[in-house]
Image (cartoon, rainbow, N blue to C red; front, side, top):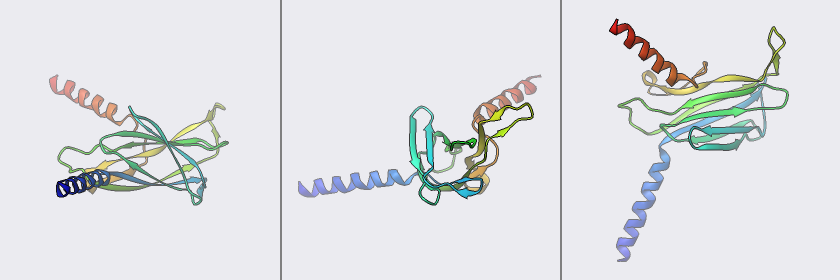
Length: 165
């Protein structure tokens, strides 16, 4: 009976450890006009799951473990600076095996700016992170990808309508 218990315990531990190894480890740096921003508050919002927080260390670095097949928004703000928001899409294309991935990002905060009409810009996109099949991993992109799924669905619908004509 002791042997059976120990075997079951070891199997449970092994399965739980292997479950933690899958996902995207985001290695981030927060900068303010290019200079590391120590102790910055990094808000991580997971769609349908809520908000969590990380804090950058004294060198402006932070680390976050993100689950695969989820969507995240990461936001950093500092008084007097634009809030920078980054979209992270951890979905894998069909046929890509789940595993452990890493991606480095830098979120840079800039001083508040005014538009030509005098309106203050308060939030800017810091780009995004998504899987790239040709590189076999996650990549940082400079454009806002927070609405990527909607854009892809609209493009597919437009193509379908063109094909039907």
